[in-house]
Image (cartoon, one colour):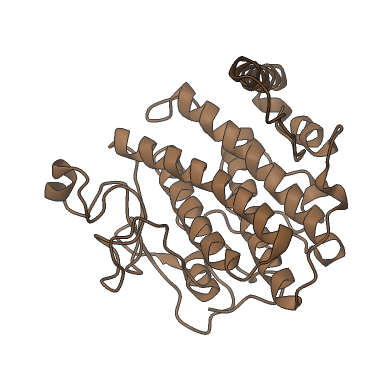
Length: 320
């Protein structure tokens, strides 16, 4: 099953052996999911967090390189709390175990678990469950990495962008994943040694999530996808107009949030993921949904709470 363990594959292993290892992992994961069931989320989360053998993150420590790194990792932990809590409710219908929230306050605006009914298919439910288990592990990983510097989950309002429904849940999830990726891309530059390595691996996993959710949005027109009025967001419906979407991807950009094309004119078409500063990330997470119901208006400069975080973040990075 998935865990916070780090497994090393013998570099001399044959292709057949590596394929067998991959197949066994996939089979074990699916056996676990089918045995657990959606109702057993808390027990499953506990199993995921318990650890087994080999190398565990429980003894890792933040690399000593100034307080800035700790602050950055705490900032990322706050965002991971939000994501894990969001997925916990839309897949399991319950909150995260208190053991990984530091007994932080219960969230408000929590929805029921998504049922299999249009536009939510069984395949989408399965995907969201996979993401849920990843996010639980990411929270656990960062808490262990920070050790005594970890913070509890802050107050969270899951209905910051409106009540979560089967129609808008995937759109909100896509926004959260994309915003987190831009936060990771920015923070990575200030990390060193193992901190950058571990955070880069988390960044990669979150990118997998974002790509999958973007494809769902592209394939399901009935899903309400949100957009951010900050000049950086690239929505899954391509360049922002029906004509551009019909024309498909081009050399200047397309369906993915990389520099060039529809985003800020100061960027060039380099095909790399763009970044948001901590202030820009917080402006979105503290932001509000415009009257249109699909556009997110970022919070103004100097704000220290709002949106998903009605009392702000825990830690030293809290203000737009």
